[in-house]
Image (cartoon, rainbow, N blue to C red; front, side, top):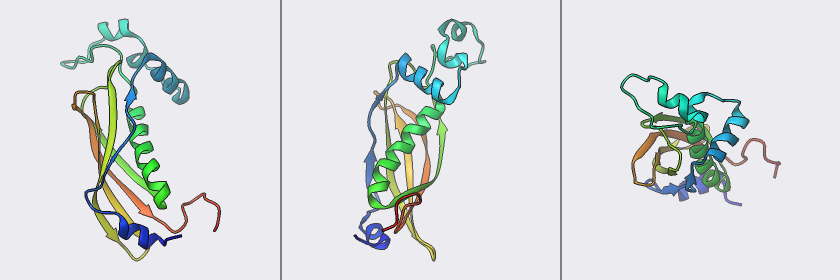
Length: 156
């Protein structure tokens, strides 16, 4: 098996990783609510959403959990990193607009920088979530480390 340095060296700045498209349904919102115990009416009650006041913001109905967007970004990074001996260390994202029922969203990441340190090999990513029309839902950045052994894996 290649060393962490060899795998790191093979990754090019500018590499784009596209995650799996995800369609938001009442079932996917319910499943995430059940898993997270987040039953905020923002996600479940269309009548409440019509009557609630959010100042100048109008959500246009129930919205998906923001943390579910975060989870989809994480899955995209993890699916790509683990086969390369990578381990996600940090993810920061800013939500720019709500994700509504019926939206199909697609996460993506782009390798924006590579850093060698005394202790390892680090990748920096620009991340984003876009809706079916290409509208930007969220953007941010992430860091990952390429390791000889991913934490939690069996020893070689």
